Amino acid sequence: MSAFTYQQGSLHAEHVDLAQLANQHGTPLYVYSREALERQYRAYDEALGEWPHQVCFAVKANSNIAVLNVLAQLGAGFDIVSLGELERALAAGGDPTRMVFSGVGKQAIEMRRALEAGVGCFNLESEDELERLNDVATAMGVIAHVSVRVNPDVDAQTHPYISTGLKDNKFGIDIERAPAVYQRAASLPGIQVIGVDCHIGSQLTSIDPFLDALDRLLALIDELATLGITINHLDLGGGLGVCYRDEQPASPASYIAAVKERLAGRSLTLIFEPGRSICANAGVFLTKVEYLKLNQHKNFAIIDGAMNDLIRPSLYSAWQEIRPVAASSDAPVRCYDLVGPVCETGDFLGKDRDLALQQGDLLAVMSAGAYGFVMASNYNSRGRPAEIMVDGDQAHLIRRRETIEQLFESEALLPVRT
Ligand code: LLP
Image 1: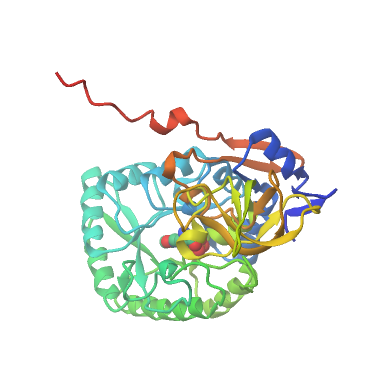
Image 2: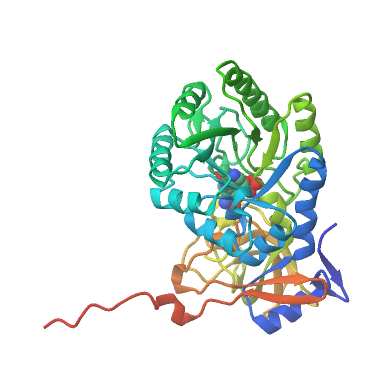
């Protein structure tokens, strides 16, 4: 059940007309549905049920503080990868003890702030990082709780740019090397080992790679037990895919059921770090047709949204559905490439789409709630879009459109030459 449906001839988010939002706030515009966000979070939480667990939303997928706050109110934890994400999650009311800190390049200043805030677990990605964290923690007189992010060397069968669990990827520590790293961690005064972690990639549609990784992690946990190292939690990362076009990803419920079955008889807290599967289908990107350019071989619809606003099509050749906001049109149906105003051939949001279009029409790029606004840039000196959260029949502006003044307010001219 989607939160985006046609009602009275126009596409709505819950009970709010997207045409009215475009009118009021302008385009391009991101619009999220609170109900859809909550439903997806609950799909994880309810499937985990009585099993001790934490669902740590991956902040990188959508870091607007209103989004984080809606999830925090449901009890979500957060997976953070930078000082900026930590501060956002805290500002949104996130509980630091339910946060896990991932990422290959944690700086000492980030570690210090995370320790001071009381972040629940550091997911260590290298041996150097372990030593640095121990130094920072001992200097502060505190103990850092850690998991080692293990690279289980499984093929996530997804786009190479978003596959992270292969030996060739920069992420995690080789599973063969992990026992030695755990032994070192256990010997350090500023470190307490609490978990094992992995994240093998994103937009996985089959659960088999997750289960392969899980089997390898369980074998590691057993090996660690023989070394006297007790593991309390197992963090399986994020990565569950969503339907953009015709993919048939596993549901959180079936994924979690399969994981629980494999864990029977063990008392391990389960942690997940879902991003996309919670927010992708809770958001759309609204854009307006500026011009139609009907060439002999190709029709272009030039829209006001561009690769700087939503880069997934350009960067990963990602396909996202594009729907007209008005349910019907008198214009002829033609096959269009939907291209933005940015001066790059790769600036498109969709190619070869059959649509009935005329100037001024509104289009909704679907499934844009994850890795949409967060990856936006100011390329071509374009201000980033506004963001709206719909809640029933109410719409809330959760981020103002970036103004032209903001674009260069932190820049400075050189002093006049004398
Ligand atoms: N945990 C870690 C350590 C991660 O690196 C990621 C995503 C997640 C959790 C959340 O994964 P998800 O549940 O969202 O798949 N920009 C790309 C996706 C990059 C994913 C990076 N890591 C895209 O637009 O497809």
